[in-house]
Length: 492
Image (tube, rainbow, N blue to C red):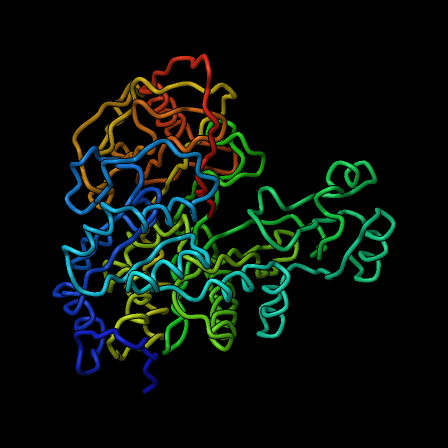
């Protein structure tokens, strides 16, 4: 059995292979190794501490006002105009209070996060922390939509019909499309960035002129525009093969939730997200791509989008996000997670000093069957208004209840959404608190509940009640001289 290499100086706690899920579950429940998720908030992996002993969250925003026993936020947090989540994470790792907290808890800290860069890697080397993620250089290369397409083609996981190339004028674009037999109604993507901001729909010269400044001089993926249904899924590349999580649909572009046209603002996880045959085809694509990425040296967590052509029934590979993602919250509360262990625990196994034996095919088959009983949803709530205002009051983090008349009431402080069981219960995690600023694109919070928030006709009435109820809890005042502000990156 192949054992993942361990870095010099790291000592773990296991001297024999863990045999199957029961022993893996026990291993984590008795874990003595300090493990941390570092981020602006605890959102992405919230609840993993239920499964993993000695798991903590190091955050910049304290959504619980000190009431969560496993969330640590430094007290001294001067106002800083962060330009990215990477900057926030690097700030936290260098913060004296955080360093002292890690020192007091002892051991070699294992650090996970969503966004990081070369500076993060250098901080961890200097301070003796272990960043349990694939190298930044590898993740940046694989994050390219061009590279994803090429590797998917090699693996037998095709994308929507496309050609790769460059175009500095509309005639060059149409010539490129004609060479690939794509027609005149096109979807054009640049290599990097959130798909809501780097995907362009071009069917005329006028469309080209509106976005040409973002396209010229770049490598392009030019696709035939199809009528499609999109689904998102997380997977984990292990030494035994690729484990595939549940599929879910996206909520995108709703002005009640986001000011960004095409911007991601939530998810629905439900059995009918894919038909049985489409789910089997999509799982096949994800496993093929995962196995190909393993040959590139990638291991651990990733998120993949798949596209279903509603006219032809074809299933295509969409985008790859080589990291923990914004849908991890859904993945880790599914029936499959509770039948075995959350998907993220397989990521931890790949980076800890432990060997283990699992049957990947058996897990994938079981999780596919269990997908027939899961219904969850989440809303990513951003501020749509343009004004910069100081928040005077904000909803508390915890359990909320939707009454028969559609109003929303606070029940109690709670640590996560894992105890939510009915559609009239929801967990809201606040991001910005009283004293912070509310502005265009500001991340107000995340709401998680059972049941669906979206149908083919749009947002459900229940969803709108939740949105209106949470927004009604915010009160703010105008700021005469507003400071510079920047939203943090909750991209899927």
